[in-house]
Length: 280
Image (cartoon, rainbow, N blue to C red; front, side, top):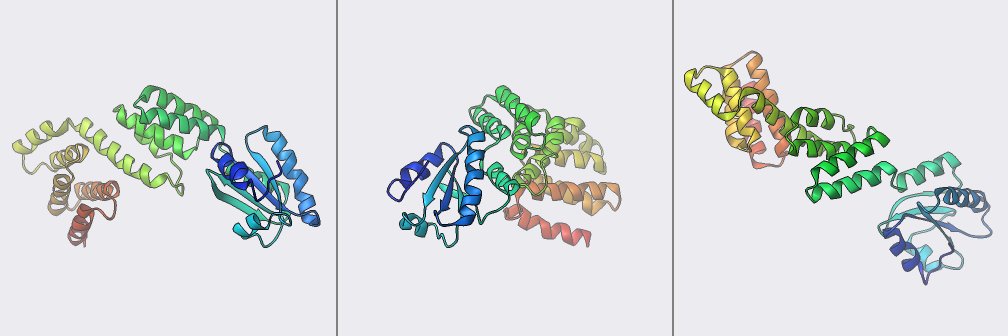
């Protein structure tokens, strides 16, 4: 479509809240514009409505050109939800343009993961899990789908599968930090279940106060139910008492709790120095 200053808000900004819009800022006298213009038009035709190509003549529409700081053409900007989310300047090769489009337009996996997230928010865990699995069939490393499925599995008390799923969230993706927190939660729940839970751990510890394995089991059970201060106290007590394998397990579990809580949490700030003092 051709767009102009007068209707830019309606034809681009508002439209981009429903479907991505690529705006080609060009001019008839611009040679490089004539090189990439047909490429963009062909890719838009191939997309069959997955995104819209809007062409704006900078000579005839100075207000919009100034608004978006156009200093060289061709300038191509991708709009989604009313905002510029990606852009390039110049007559770049077609493979680069395709990558630009791929980053802008939600993939089939993106759409399926978004729908699964909506179902999860509504409490429909079974259908949400199915949706996430379908997204992963389309893209096996889709970070949002892996994170979402891991959360659903955690809510369904399937801790082993939740851990395996969450650990597949790629490093470097925005979803990875949240995945690390859920990994810690699922690990504590799994440990607590395998050791018999809080009541059993307390029984063992009452029978044998020097049973460090029981102390670890109790700390894991406390962490699993959200009693984080008591869990940290338990793990640090093991670090104080032992210099071998139990000490390392307690140290690793304490660090996992710090990940779960976050660096700025008051308990992390209180107990991290204590752990350091005991270790060094």
